[in-house]
Length: 614
Image (tube, rainbow, N blue to C red):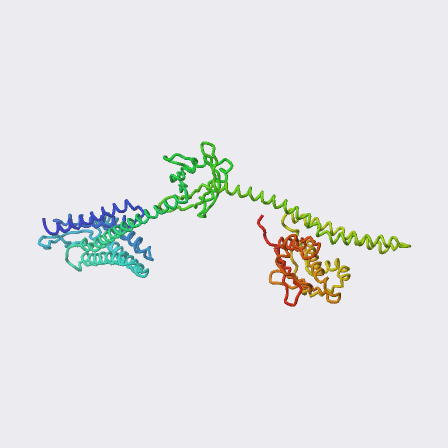
């Protein structure tokens, strides 16, 4: 056996081996179409080796012509493989060049079998033999060139341009050495093979057809792809082992955390409906410790009043990737009801599998029982508070009604005196009766608003200008202030904003503050009894200051305590009621003793009603 035969058989065997390896790789990764193109290219090189060896060993012109004809078949498959490989790996800009090359080559193959003995000659009359590596080999001698040969050579030129476009595109994208090595190896094989075909078949050169050795470059590139793939696979395997080790540690940590939290983990396959669950999850739902589970098995354990809501939640979670949180009841076979809290989210779909709903469940029966006990305790405390408040309300009403009742009594006595005159002064009696009716209505309003505040814990609200409220209170106290010889100074800010407040209750607050101020200066000489009222706007509220030059307060904080009074015979409820009303409005009230003497009581009310959780 000659060296030529040995070399060609080796090249064919190498190509077939590479084709088998890449075929196995493609069968494991069906999406890697470049592997299939490598298989086709390697088989075409093996076919070229066989056809070329047949030509080199031909003994007659007819045998040589026949081998040259069938030589075009593996060439056509090689064209298809190269175009596919360049398209997939190098992503050229001008794909039409590749389609043109395949189309022209297809026409050339058809012409091979229709226009003569082969694509290159319409008639081959003579072949020659020369020595190569110590053995005689055949080469084309005399013959008539086939014009269809131009089609095949045009296909080769289109292929060269297509490979160049792919290589340039890969280089511009900054791709690695692998892509450039592939482009260069294919380009060298096709370009040199084209040059050889032109020179030989147009009688510019006189040597054998030796195309297969040129594609050793392509085989080398394919082998390097395999080597790099093996290295990447080995590295990927090491990485996978490291990740598996890390995952094992993470799973152990997660398991420890789940045990510490007494939580159960589960996952729902949206496609099959199968459920994976930990032992704790099976325990929480009173499900068998072993065996396959479905969503229906879990839903059977959910309380019938919660089933519809849980089904809707699962359906909604599977449509999105948002987290969900819920609480529901489960009933075990013995009829015992337990509360579970669920938290999870939907993931996927991914290449690893379909959309999955993953979650964690925690038994919160004890927590629910504790919350119920706290609610019952709160209800008892609220009932006790209402009973105590009702007791205080009676005292508060007595305090707050003292002023309007005293006014009614004074007016009634004055009316009696006027009626006793001869003749009676009916005009003034009518005015007095109107004052009595007004005081009576005010007393009724005070009772109704205090009762509403007690029942709801929230005062009625309306837009209230404090300057107007101060004017109305001064009108109510006008005669008393004059009778006590008190000088009243007003310093009301212009354009004061309105507040959201209960008009009747805030007027009662102002009434109490002014009454206390007048009582504080009662011990001063008649000409030295001064009370001032000032208002000013704050950033988010309104401030009212009532100042007197009386005896002052020794304990500014204690005067707001219930039943604490500095006035002989006082109930000690006035300022306590003031603080309660102001607090219900989200405001503040406090007292100060200036260095100059007397006392200042500050009343602050916010512009907007505060939010209270019910």
